[in-house]
Image (cartoon, rainbow, N blue to C red; front, side):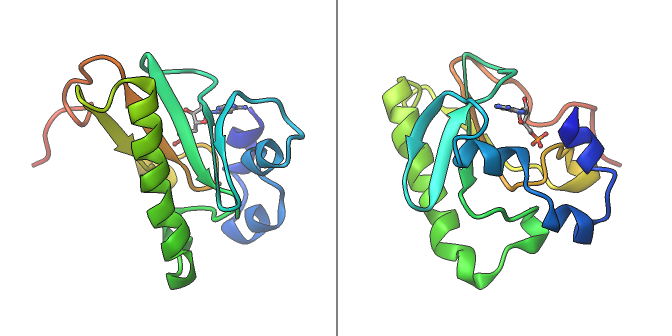
Length: 134
Ligand code: AMP
């Protein structure tokens, strides 16, 4: 609910408010953490959409993909390495999985702390809901 409320604020205001996910990184809000290092934290999604649903986030609170800078390249690349390792550990690497990063309103972003969804453990169906374009 808090994340939805935050979504109503302008980007400049949101940038100064600690995100829900920053609090998870800091251990102030409970989460099932499956990986943490100096750049990235990964934890199970509270409302899983598939048997495996893990969120991989930069510890640094980048609000959206629009806010990514060249400085973030190493961390963002590291998120893929962490995703690979978690997928392997969860036993879904060979069957396959999906990585999703939502951005802003049309992307369906709810929490304004950039995150990669790692989902798998069942066939995931068509890439997008809502039919075709054009
Ligand atoms: P998005 O729509 O891409 O912003 O996704 C936000 C995700 O965060 C959703 O899948 C939520 O279920 C998940 N989420 C929200 N709060 C928590 C929380 N406290 N712990 C774990 N996952 C959460």
